[in-house]
Length: 473
Image: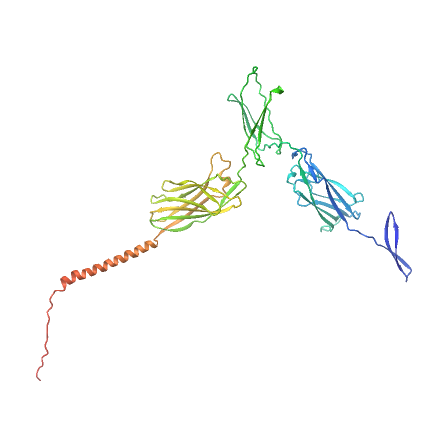
């Protein structure tokens, strides 16, 4: 006989199944507990973070915090289980610990934390790189003890991923001050005499206000003035293209004698690019003797970087053997994908070299192209010789970069020119041979008819006639 009944066990009511064994007269009681699936939920409060106090500095200890409410349902209270909560793809912009970066944490499951708990997620000062969507992963795993020698990872009883969005709102409109990463060289002159010279440094690399104070003690009469000049050289690296403003405030010990000036500076982005050419082995090209020929160089060039300088000028220089019998008449440069702008014509440097300046207007979406450099040579030289081509940028003394910083390798190429007889030369040789043969035959015929027949054909030759004579027998 089977029947259902409720059995009181402590404070909780459990469902039980009573099964009677008729043969032995025994009754066995089995617990039948209804288990619902375990669930874990995460809620961010608030999901909108207001920035009222500006952007904190990395050196400051205070950080913005977001409250994460974590709730558990239908969790079995056991000392052998623990909850693991971690960030997936976590950058160094938020942490669950205020003093150091921590992106995952564990805690045992007890009767105290079965419901809902609140945890603080600390936003680091560089939280602007934080993605809008956060990915959490909650796991309930079996806790390992020190005596457990099993090297396998504990089994995962529950695993769930959560996607939460967080929005940063800046409610303040305070001005941003450019940080001084490199020291500023500040000099103050009075009547062409330097009386103060110092370097201005910033205590922090973040956006803070940098200022200097100089005390200049002098006495002047009423309604008089003195002149001084402030020279500030601040080469800085800015993360944006906004033009910074240099604010200068001059005041005396009287509050009404303060003067303020603002100078808007022009921010120029640092050119960050590099140029690389494919190294080619020397090649041989056959040319005709005493003709004007074209020498072609096909160069694979790569220009990559964030900010390419379109005003950068290049020089294509062709070097020849030191001879007076060869000259460069023209240099032409073409590209498959970019525009080539010439800066001047081909210029000879004596008899051994010539150059031409040009600029490359690079397309932002195309980093690799091919330059075709054609040098027209007027060859009178009879022997073989070598032609070298070198391409290098023209960098001035006040340039923001150097040749070594942008050129990955030396763009130098060469060709070995071999003088040989061409088809026209062979045709002219054959034609000359034919003409020579025809002249020889004509001379022979002329000698035969004009000389041989005239002088040697009239010589008399005796002619003897013999008659047939018959003798009697």
